[in-house]
Image (tube, rainbow, N blue to C red; front, side, top):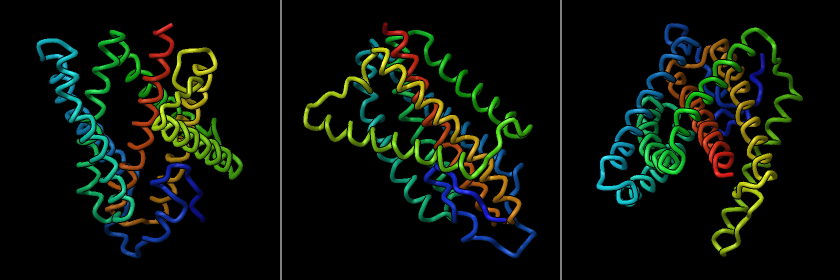
Length: 253
């Protein structure tokens, strides 16, 4: 059975096929991957609690955000470096994936605190929607309400690539002082684009479920549980951030 392509860059077509092992005594399982995903979620939460508390325990929120800013940058840069290390050194995922989760938590905690300061209650809404989407799509996948076909994979892969390109162009233009309003403002066009991005991020979860299941069926080595959990976390964090951005646009109107 050939493992299908996931549009998640951490779970490429050959991720599992290149590390298949003949030792059935220590192979990747779905339950093992789920357990490690929960561990990573816990570490993200612990990291987020540090910078969240830092912001709201300060003299005022503005000062707290200034104090947390180095943690935001450090978490973002550290998370990116660890993600790249994990992608190229999959056998080290048992070390790099948990560390990545902590760094991402530091970034998400302070970032979420800024949104919460501007729009009280928005973080709880974003977290609830993120997990709601996760479990809803997991149910849809397990009950075959959504079937992963090759056309489905290619469509999500192309859409995800287009979103990545759009953000890259927006970032480059921003370096030259050019604001891309239809992406970042709160107009209806910008809100519509955010809705589409949230949908595409959600569909990536379906591909990740399918990819991880097929990887466990093919007997990937045990350490790939950490790598697979890491890949799923990448999608979940992306989905949470996009939902947070969408809610902030709606709340700002």
